Length: 422
Image 1: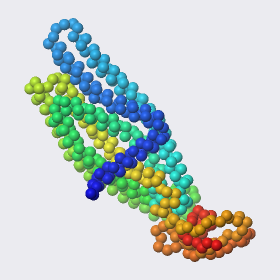
Image 2: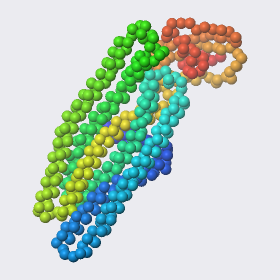
Image 3: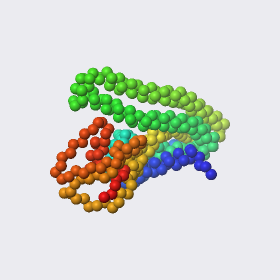
Image 4: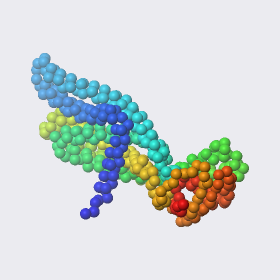
């Protein structure tokens, strides 16, 4: 049975974020646990406040027609509960902000260490691959996104728990109310995710062009190169390449945002119409005597908070999709095997048992060949020579003849594709 591609994509995203959570947990388990507890606490306070408000208004309504001096005592308990929940909400949000900031610092430092640790473990041949440099530069340059993932991820969890709780409260009055809210917001969620992912993929695809822009900038601004640029009058050429690359990126980005805002205008109008319909429904039900004043207050508060949380979740969800592209690049980099053939040098065949080197003996190549990945011919083929102790040898040849490759083979930064055993 063939799996649905959307299900595979969802599974992939969940796996990425689970690994991100593991990285954050490994950075500091205690801070991560405290953050999760504070997130749950912050998530439930808003729905509890809405529910207590309904109880207070219903009790006030019940007391309006009664006489007596002790009616206000009935309000003491819900009022105390409301103030208590509000205080807990304020304290938990303040503590969460501080704890989250500390966790961000530890997580980024931990991830940066993982990145350079991986670089230190990889074969030196990786560093001759432009594709590898693009992958590593994205992992290093955008490591700040891990901080966004912690902040935005916790905010999404808070919003989702609050939304579910508020929808349950609305569903207790009428099952139509939560259904209308969700259906009106669902298209906006899908649209936001679609356009955010397009922007993220555009930014990631631009990594080679960004390296070119940085290189052009360095040629025009650094002391070591500015004289040669002026000597050969390359200023206008380099400025033109820089300007053209930036303009291409701006046009691509503007086209995406223009399409996004056209779609969002229609979807925002749909959301406003659905909200107005809920308010009209609540008013009619109140006039008919089907719901209480507390129910009306609950509907208005829950709908407004739900709309805000849904809109906020849509925005944060878009950012999380954008961060998903980065997580793919980060974990793709961290998963590279030290001798991985993909994007780097071909793995050398077994050349036999290595002999203990004679540090005072000659340096000898016997039938050594080497080819760079993706190349259609060998950089060096069947090279044999001997350099005796004390002998001085000069390597002479045209650009691309293989001089640097030969030196790297001599120093064993590269492994020969093939060689004859002694």
